[in-house]
Structure formats: C-alpha cells, structure tokens
Picture 1 (cartoon, rainbow over the protein chains, first blue to last red):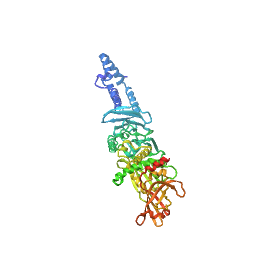
Picture 2: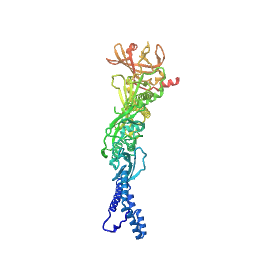
Picture 3: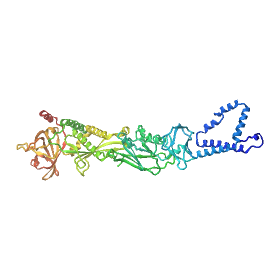
Picture 4: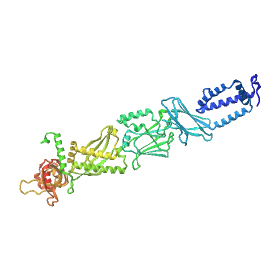
Length: 318
Length: 294
C-alpha cells in the first residue's frame, strides 16, 4: 500500500487509473449483463440510485463531518484505488463473473401489444411448472437458466392462451420470444362436421387419435372439437370461432357452439407436431371397429393465418 | 251409398270400418293362419347404418322388423305380417332416408314379386327439418322407439288406407278355395268356402273378393262376395268353420265376363288359386253372432 501524495498534484498514478478503469468496467459489465439477461436491472438501478437504498447512505454521510469524510475518502482511495493488488481482486471478480455467465442463458418473452393480461410459466422441461408470472401488454418476462455448451438446457415456455414452446438455451444466449407470433407452431384443431356432431351428441363413441406410433383414446367422445399438439387452454382464434358460429347458426343449432369453441385436448403427453407428420383420427363403434376415419398430414404454421390447422371428420356418405 | 258420392267420404268410411274390424278381429289365434306378408327393415342411410357394427345392425334391424310387423298386423289383421328377408315376397320394405335440411323420413314400399316394380311407396316424416339440429340425432334405441311410434301413428291416420288398398289389390289372402256342393234344386248358387276361420275373419262376412285361378282354358278372374255365413272347411273333410262366399262373375282372360252360375262345373277344376280382397265391407252383425256364441 502506497500513500498517494500526488492526488492533489498534476499527475495521476497509473495504479489509480488502472484500478479506476477496472472498477468501472466491472460495474458496467455487471449492470450490462443484468440489463441483457435478467429482470433485475430496475432493482439494481433503484438500489444504486439516490432514490434507492443509497439515499440512506447519503443521509448518513451528511451527518459525518467533512474532515472525517475526507479522512475516509483518503483511506478508501489508498486502500482501493491506489492499491496495486486491488486490480487483481477486480480482475478475479471479472473472471469469476465471466465463468459464471458462461453457464447461464435466458429466455425472454415479450408482449409488444395487445389487450388484457396474460401469464407466463417458464420452467425446465421435465421439471414441475413454476409460478405463473404476469405479463402485460408492452411487458417483458425473463428467466435465467443454468446451461452448458455441451448440453443446452431445454425450457418450456407457456403463455396462457397459446401453445407452449420449447426453447433450447445456450450459454450467453437470450432466447427471445414474442407473443403471439413466436407461439404459432404446427397444431391441429380437429372437429366433427355438423352432421357428425348431431350423430354423437346423444350417443357418444370412442375417438382414437394416432400420431406416428403414439396413440390416444377418448372414450365417450360426444363431438367436441379437439386440440392435437397443444393443451386445452389454447384459445381458438376469434375469426375461426365466428366462422363456426355462422356454420352452426346456418344449420339452426347455434346453441351447440360450445361443443366447438371450447376444445378438448389429448390426455397424457401432448405430441410435439412437425410438418409432414401423419395423424389418423378414427371414430370407433362399441366393438372397436371403425365408423368414420380420416388421415391428414401436419402442415407448417408460418404465421397466425395458418394457425391452427383445422381438420374435420364427417359421417360416412356411402 | 256414401262411397258413391265422394272419394274422400269413401276413404273416411273405409278408415272407420277398418278400425272397427281391427277391434273385432283381435289377435289371430292358431288354426288357419292368414298368408304372410313379410316385413323388412333396413337403416340404409349410411350415416346411421354404418354407426353400428354388422352384428349389432343386423340384430337391431331384425328387432325392428318384428316391431313393425306387429304394428302392421294390429292394423291390417287379414294378413300375417312377419319379419322377413330381402328375398321374401310379398314384402313391405321399410328403410330410413335423409333428405335436404336434415329431414329424416321412413320410407315404405310394397313388393309383390321378384323382378316386378314396387306396387306403391309411402313416406312418413320421422324428423322434420330442424329437429335433429335442435336435439341431436337420437340414440339407436331411441331411434327405433321413435320409428315404431311414428309408424304406428301413420297407420292410425286415414292416409294408411292407401296401404290397405294396395295390400287388398296385391297381397293374397288365401291360396285355396273349396267349392260347396251344388244344390240340385234351383236356384243353383256357386258357393264356396275360404280357409279363413270364421270366428277370426267374420269382419269380412260382407266383403267382396277377387279370385285369380287357372282352369282348362287359361286364366280366369272370379268376383265373389261373402254371404255373411260360415261353412265347413273343407266340405268333405270339415276342420273348422270357414268364410262362405258366392261366386258372382266369371271373367276369363279372353272374352267377356259371364255369370258364375254358368260355370258351376268348373269351380272344382281351378288350380293356382289366389284370393284377394276386392272390397272390404265391415259386417258387425256377423261378428256379434260370433261373440254371442263364444
């Protein structure tokens, strides 16, 4: 430790300059990382501003006499900024931070514009769903994950009303998702025709759904619409609901619209659909023979117009 | 008298008479059973027919055939309606059809013989437009109940007289007729007995019949009328009291109609006999005498 007699002189010691720059760089890096990868910047910023906890420090410092304050500053200057070893301490912190950050990545969900409010759940695939975080129009939700270059972490992002999305997060990555566009992915919305709905309303049958080698069975299927590839809370787009209401109104049964506008979903593991996959939907009689059946391929969902892929099943005509 | 004035009045009259006849005839007992008219029911409409597995569908159709046959039998007791197959004749064929606006109808057709067109067809509205939309298609069990109910209602309506008329004209009542011995004293009447048990068929005691048969010179059509009396069937080997008729007119295939009295010697030579009702006239007095005896 060297006393800095020249702090009032013309020249500034190199040690001071290098330590000052190191401290500045360390602070800026930490704040920059927080700003880019976390939701903490407001908290940290608030902490550091005079409006935050430091305002108490400022109050305390005002109580201290000027002379004592100068002595403290001189001590701090000597032990921190004019200390040749301090830069190694700062560099050490930087290296630790750098290494630590190399095992972290984040998911960012942004809702640029919209109405109402939504909630976001972000959790590692295979782990229990975490708490829902509110998301307002114009808001952003971020979530940090421990991850590795060799095995990036997979996180499930679920915004209520939309299909979930699996994000593969690499270190240093900010996986950006925008509501709603990022959440449109291949999903099938299956429904019976009006005739088939009427046939099933009073005498349900079993519905079998096959996606590749996986199969699901819905006993007592009474003609409701069905999501294939997402969970039941996904909203049927309003435009589609309007079309469906018009179809049912034209058929003289507008009161049955609830069969379609509140779809069921497959129980158990939800299939992650990919374009080109073949889905087979079959209505089964009591003896498990087929009453009506249809196969269709999963189509890409490039935008909200193509979402969701609607598929129908009709009564046998021949 | 009524039937000579207005056709609608005649239909009305037939409807009332038939209703009373049904009440009088009651259920037909064993003995001389009337000739069968088969009933076939098929779902046919693919959306409902394929809803059931083959075995269940066949079972339900068979069940429905029996139920419809029972309704027809209770309405038209002169024939023995029974469940049949698609190769049985004469046959009332019943099936479901779906029309525009989701209207569902029960269709009937009467077929007398293979390779011949249907005698006539009828449609009964099962579900009017909008009903299925309102309540959904009924379960299969309910559907069968509703078909039966609607069918019964239709048979209870005056419009079902058309079915009776077509049955009278085409469905045989008997395939036999036994001539009674001719009285040696005039007037010599061409009397005969039909193998229709008197206590069950007394309601036909004033009705007219038409008998198609073959004789030595070709085919002949004979118009006969019930005499209101019973007679032993058969006259030479009595088994039960049959319905006595008197032949009125002899109409050969070629040539003008003649009085039946001129052909007394030919009635014993008739073959390939087919007896049909020509005009049903209810005779309550005859049935009352039956009731009193019983």
